[in-house]
Length: 473
Image (tube, rainbow, N blue to C red):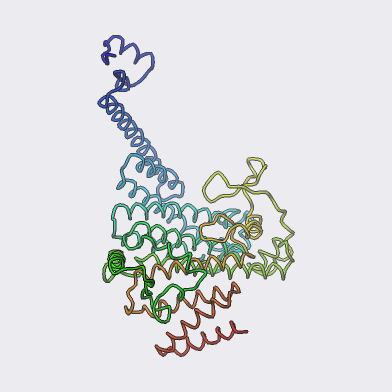
């Protein structure tokens, strides 16, 4: 019908409903495109005003807690509201500010003397009774803020990842580093630390692969080459030079080959692009961190077995990691835990509100006992020991992805390319050797030996030949 309404009637409806005058709209039946556009515009304006107001309200809370960890939460909320109303530059600025608040708090906590030593299990610690948990909570928050910053930087500067790469470099420079001196983390917490490090590299590799022109499609060939070995899908006469293999098959005509070559050329990074701008660099770093996680997990498991058997006590896990003399600490009861109310926290299930947080000894024991819950860099499982085989498989998968990306983006014959590919394939062969796949390891090591012999790298050749001997035995 008619979309007109008398002023008296409209005023009465607005007063009765207590609504903004703009929110009362009459529409013809059936609605016309123009009337629907009016409603859409109103909703857009109201949402923009609401999110803008919430952004300003949360940002105001940070001013009273500047340079404090208390400013991180409202700073993150303010940035999220800025994203909601499309202020991408404002969101980037607010995420950076929140990241800076956290960075200041983390630096202060890391320099507290003795903060992560055995004394950290008791309430007398300068960081409070739970310094290890507090550290991993900061790392979890930093991970969220860092990912937001990188995603926005890559969105605002398409094809130009320099700022995102610098953010990644600074992020890992700060948080990958273990606490200094005598305040180092207990050994039982090291697998969790390296799991976190691997997840940072893996997430950035995936983000970079999705956002830069030369990163697309890098994961497609990884699954196939992981089982068959690098040499099985081309890559030059020795399998590690990084050059593309033959396309093969009579069904491929010259037109198809030319189209494929044009696609590959379009996906190449600009000349002189640093390797830190390539996704393969970060897949490789994630694989190295995952391997370090496996080594530290096995060290924790070995120390626990020496000190107390299959179910490690606080003395066995902490005593192996910290100073001598902690062996007499009684066993810590196993407690049921769940995700806490805040990012990166755990809580006791069924406990009183005043007792929901775990003690550090309980937290470390939980990390050890939950080690079987998922090996990958992006998994949500714990970070303890005993997950050797799944972690080897995860390392192989990441190294294969790194090789596939480098093979597409690093030109054969470029500076350092031979050593790069040989190093990658050597690591991959070691992974297959650890997994018990001697045939794949032998094939990869043989291809690496050809490169080392050709380049005259005798020390590396000797190590490779000894590994080939291990495959034979």
